[in-house]
Length: 302
Image 1: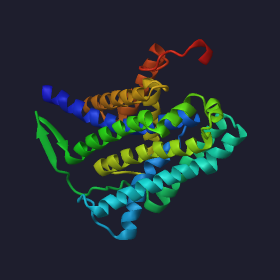
Image 2 (image 1 turned 45 degrees about the horizontal axis):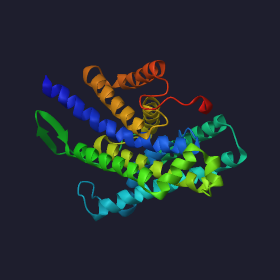
Image 3 (image 1 turned 180 degrees about the vertical axis):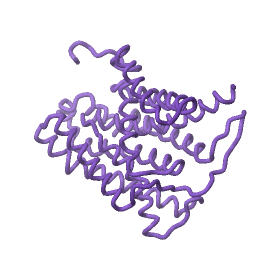
């Protein structure tokens, strides 16, 4: 029995860490631009398909070997995905930002971008699941717990990426500028920080995290054109329950969702995981509407 709960915990932790990458990407874009970036789901979906496109163009078959060919394909997919995100900001969001459009208009535009991108992917690659890692994955067993080689990679890459994100945010000049624009874009402009430039950089950082997460998941369980909406909704819920004003809260919220979903999947079925996600959201909003790790806003900030 102990090994079963440990297995559930390990699986949930790994999934939660990958969710955390998507949630951090979603949160930094929301805080830096005030855009509820539903198209983040399209960005999430795009990276594995850009990798598949690279494979088809180059005729490469290096799926199972960590070599220069695989590395080049992954880097290319991530770079193109980040450029797509920057393009969405410049073409779709920037005009709304300049005109002072309402958040509803921006949200609808983002949803439209998501639909267009997903359908383009479905047209070119089809609706069926595509596997980036053919065959059975090698497994490791310890303390009665079995994990695949890809799960180990997911854990390591996710931890490194999360740590790298916080180092960038707290120790770099770019991170300080992003935090300044997120807190008060008007004051940041007065101090000479270009909000327009920071917006693009925020989209690049957020999309980098989403791309890494989606490639990890795609190599583990495959990908379809429609996985993005579930991913972005889970990320949004993780951000809300953790606290919109806390990046650490996003990580905690994502891990909580990963653990909860795996408990439900183990004892019930995969069909119930979205239900438990939104049940947790409702409970947190009722009991602590500012999120688990966010401090209450001052009266003048409400």
